[in-house]
Image (cartoon, rainbow, N blue to C red; front, side, top):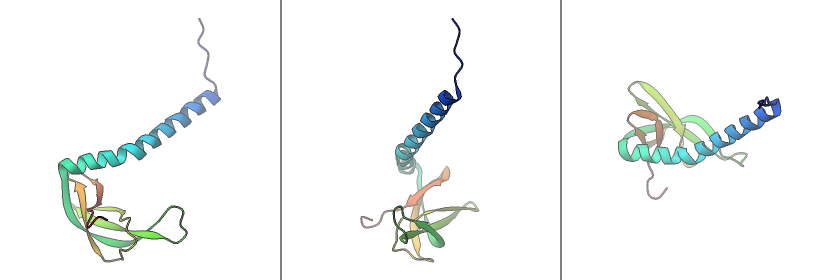
Length: 111
């Protein structure tokens, strides 16, 4: 029995399927992974709002600023997702001790 060679169209379909699957895993697994890591190894630190705008989807002018914090001399930045914060404001952030890239603002008063 001879094996049929895969065409370029077949490889393209496989590539698109892998990309879609990877995106879905990222969208659904990333929040769960972040929650699990921070629940078991979360550290709290003060972060400062910086002049780095993150425009909200489907809005032409709405944005939130990023925050920045330093762990062992390395700077970490993420979106505050809070339109009320201004440059220079301070917020509390939780991060995973073994991987500070996993971080998020600490929710305060139901925010």
